[in-house]
Image 1: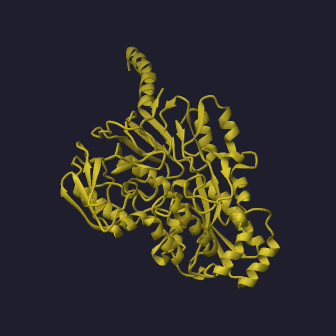
Image 2: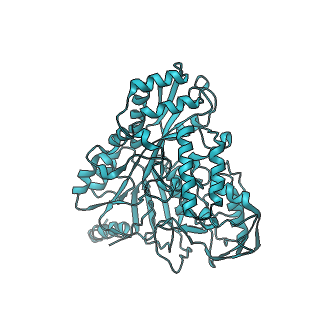
Image 3: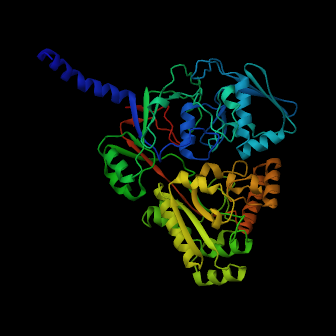
Length: 523
């Protein structure tokens, strides 16, 4: 190479790096993206991926209300029993085909097979059709004013709009392609499992012309040409990458390293979701010992929510957790403290041991599943393993990667045949706002969420909640639901933690809710 060429290359290199930095956002997700289809899982990493690739008919704002997203709006006729939703113009899928109402109808039907809110909506629907290319029509058996938030809630699973040919895929099978109409394309050719996921800006995406960006509502204006998700299972590695300016954004700031991150001038900590993360110990209602409701009730005296929260954030960060936690997200309209006194005060393990024996516990193996690739769940799992042992239970810990845990979770047989007794998991508080989409609070037995609780009174009260005339009546029903849940024990709430995110201080426009990548730009 000639000297002049060497000088030119050396001069151009920094400019090239600066240009790439300006157009590429580097992000550290909570974990590796395994499942791609946002309809078939409750994993939040997949929910976040889903909102990159797919769009939704409605968005959810910071007050948990629905606002039009893919639709211009809707009309309601026949005393609330006829809804016509009108699609916006210039909606395109990533494969170059226009978004049509029949695509949306097929997408709604597929999602509704997996989502409890969607199940209720379809049970109320007499006819769902597409009378023309831009109109989605719901003809209802009775009024259902929650229709927009059912289609637009930011909780899992996502009501993602996809081409009809993909939406016709069985709801219990993965779609073969990631073709949506969202603001980003999924780059399947650049995916490196366990290491990297890449998205690029969808040039034909047309944001809404008006609205306030927050959560999944408002215009989705993309400022980066490329977003890279770089998986780093070790929180310390992620912290170092942020401190050394190697990455732009880490979804979950390590709770054990908050003082260090706060001191870094080039970083900013922010809590995006004020509903927090709510944790639970889910138990298997089909097999011993937790098929015995008296045993489930006897264990309440051992549950130490404070120990679980201190394991995550320590006693010096009380502003980052809330106790006691019941069955609805704290400080939201349906939450109350009805029946929660059993969670207050010191734990008396000797008394719990006696109560368990009196209830019929005979030393059966309790197989506790703990996901090892989530530091938060791993820590709480260790607390619960110790708790169950001190309560006098025969505990076997099954500590594996989260997706391996999910595979075993589907088994319904006894522990001796590869089944399980309990597992630790968490949810966004936005999934515990009301009985409508609260998957873990369903009492529909083997048709429901792993653990398969059968609670007919809770199911009846859930139906009554949809028919309640006002918020006060809904709140009264939710208090009764919580009291019945304390009696039937579908799971044990372990506490609510506020999880900060951390990003470079030269980023602006990071929205409340969860990690979304529109509206974000470099200052």
